[in-house]
Length: 436
Image 1: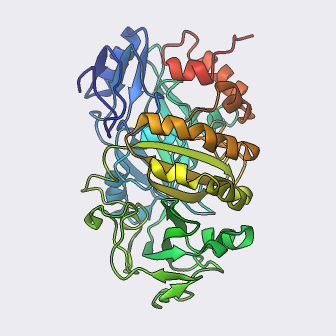
Image 2: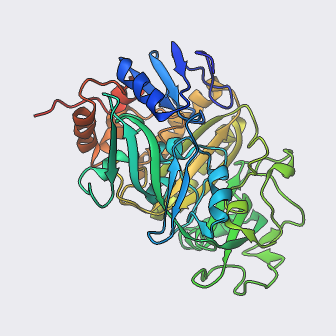
């Protein structure tokens, strides 16, 4: 990797003077101890400057891959640089699964957890909510472990930490028994299904639900339902009540897709996970995209806001008043849900959330023009932006929407008193607090 490496879509050029790629833990510890300021870099899937720095970057992708299952404890210990798709395949072979995955299996576990990345489902927390312990290299190059059980006062602040506490090298994740799902896509969900009660039913109609719209009209273009097979997986508003039953040709006014779909019309569907209601393992249905293909639409910019789930219908109705402005800059928008958690910097901290995601065309001026209007319309619902996406909400407002922000700032000052792991992004949104 060169000092002028970009994020995965080429929309952000990193300003680092040097990029390290250690191949052993000892080498990483030496680099961290000897460097004045340094930031960890995952798979570079962020669109904000959360990982950027003018100092040094270090990638953990070259460290030895770890996948160690503890069946008795229902956990797996993984290296931070491993991608979810690679982890999932190895984990499934042991009879275990992660409860949820993001849309992309291409992202690294460490980076996804550090920024609060998520999948979907009213009962499914973000990816970081599965973390039981983290092991990180601190400013002096030493290893430190923080866990849910041993460090209850600090651990909730250490998981989603934006890289500000150290370089995470290993994580312990909760696992569940492996399971199967059936995925189908319904097209053209009528606007009548987007009222408050109806929309909540739609969002709760499967284990994982994603709504896609291009804001060309009041309807939802596609509804992706990932129906879990087996006991304890029933949803009252599901289109099917039997694991083997065919999905109905129409559901809530939407029609069942007769061929594979891509969220962005015109893009090749071969990159998407199998649809049509065919049963398959969890890791081949929960993501929208296959690991072996380049995901999404290529050159793009992303934005996402998370707000209380009960405000989903009102928020979508508000955004509908500027649908033409949104559509003019957009590839596609995705709406999904995330269960509440207790992680201090989680966008779903202590509130069940709806996530409204925008995949924009690679037109920074057009995106910058429409974001203020979106954020003004969503302001009554106190949206929290995804840390790794592009947004314009002021640092003071963002900070005010996190009740434990000052606790995190104190924790960062305690674990990294000289700011070795800070950057402009962290300094802007979570400036250090002096220790007492």
